[in-house]
Length: 255
Image 1 (spheres, rainbow, N blue to C red):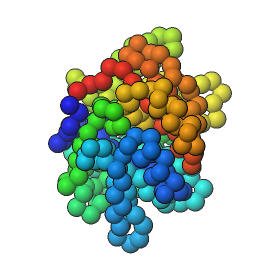
Image 2: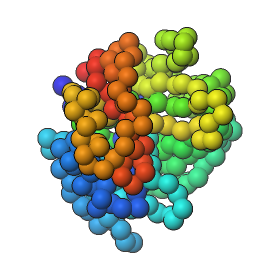
Image 3: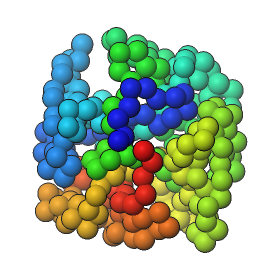
Image 4: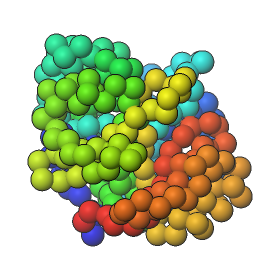
């Protein structure tokens, strides 16, 4: 259950953490999720740490590339062509922050920003498909756009990936994102007056949400939204000791 050998184009398929303290982050997340960590040198300097669950690649982390940028979990969407996706994003009013480039033999990617300011990456797989395990305890399960302009965001992502949006709640207003016939994420409004720009929030599945929330505190993190019930289960939002935000979900999961 949850094992993947490929991800269809338009699917959120990978996440990695950019952090100023890779060793501290490694200790936190291996303690929280039971991940195994393997460091790999990066050509030109640096280290990319692969994070695994039961031997399957589920995420990664590395040192922040630039000072002054807050730590964050990045969201990656599989595409058939990173070059075509980057060009299309520009046509739709997005920004290409890093033009398409090869990641050794693993794949080709570009770093993009939607017109409201949310960062994300596109991934054209070669040797590395992205996450080999999803929708199980300790693995990527969901990506949520907290949007300053939902209608503009919908037009952008429909044009870029062909996603379909459905309203599943009116109070608060919440849209589900579908890639083909599969659920692929969600969209909600930023809180009124929020100083934060639009951003993608990464969710990891857990079997025991209350236990995970307790471990976050024990490991030096902070639970900023406590376990909260939603129709499909319960979620929480947390911040790791280095300041990166992420979310947890326990409940109904896709296979």
